[in-house]
Length: 182
Image 1 (cartoon, rainbow, N blue to C red):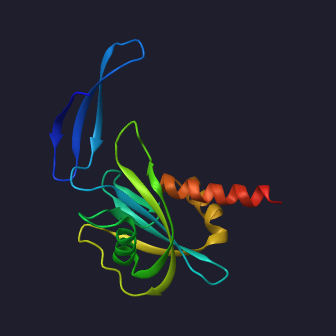
Image 2: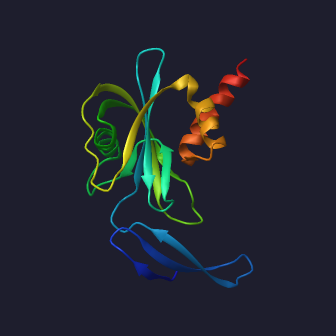
């Protein structure tokens, strides 16, 4: 496929690809990519003891001009494994440390817009220190009971707060599983 760069910054690149439709017609598609990383990690961090808590962040996102409720997350550094990136980002953003429980596959959140993927990694919390966010990050660390995740997010959504899709899907999946089990 023919491809060209339309615009580029150190962290984003707007690209255009030429492709052919089922009928053989040539079309162009514009998309965004991240030129300096191999993707991102999304960290589902929970406590071990019952009742279990989940660690979330409320982070200011300049693209929206407001805060978003999310799982801790970040980009893979050069030469870093998914697991190392997850543990590093968890500590930087929240101060929590942990051990890896599960590493998912590379998953796409908006494949019509970007080729960026994320690996969702489950972490069990083992300790807590001080967060060390990057200068431009404005992050509030939240620790919520896992059993209250879905109703709390519903309330926030009704109040006009923004919720990341990965967090919403996780909460909805847990809620549906609990509902259908009864």
